[in-house]
Image (tube, rainbow, N blue to C red; front, side, top):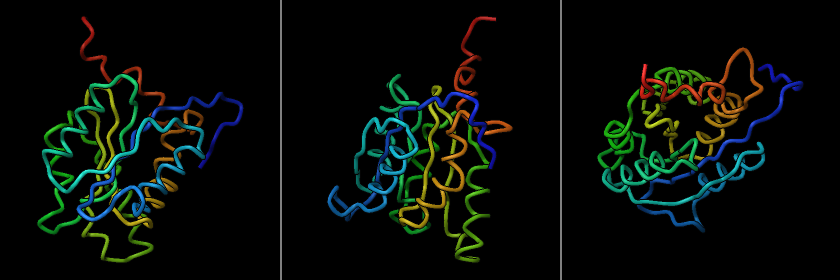
Length: 179
C-alpha cells in the first residue's frame, strides 16, 4: 500500500482497551501486542486498560475517550464474538455517531484468507463519535495483527495514499460548526 515518504508523518494519540473476564495486564498478549505496534508505528500510546465483558464498563471507557481531546483513536480488543458474554459491539452501538462499515467488511475479508468461514463469528467494527475514531478488534493476537498490520497501520498513517483517516480528522466535527 503506497506510503508517500515525501510527506511528513503525523502521529496520533491512541488508547487501547482489552475487554476480558480472564486477562490482566500481565496475561494480556493481544493488548500488549497492539500497544507495541502503535508505538512502533510512531504513534503515541495514550493509555492501555482492561475491563470485564460488561457493556456499561466498555461504554464508560469509550465515552471517556470521546470526551478526552487527547485521544484521537480508541481501539478495543476482545468481546466481538457471538457468545453471551461478547458485548463489545453492543457497547459501541450506544456510543457511535457514524459507523465505518468498510472496516468490519475488510477485516472479515482479510481474515477469510487465514481462517476461512470461521470469520463470520467476528463482529469487528469501526466508527466515529465526537471526532474520535473507535475500532473493535477480536481478542486473539492473530486478529490484532490482521487488524493493525493490514488495515489500521495504513489508515492511521497520514502519508498513506490515495487517502487515510488522519487527513479527515479536522473535518469529523464540521457538522457542529455554524454554517
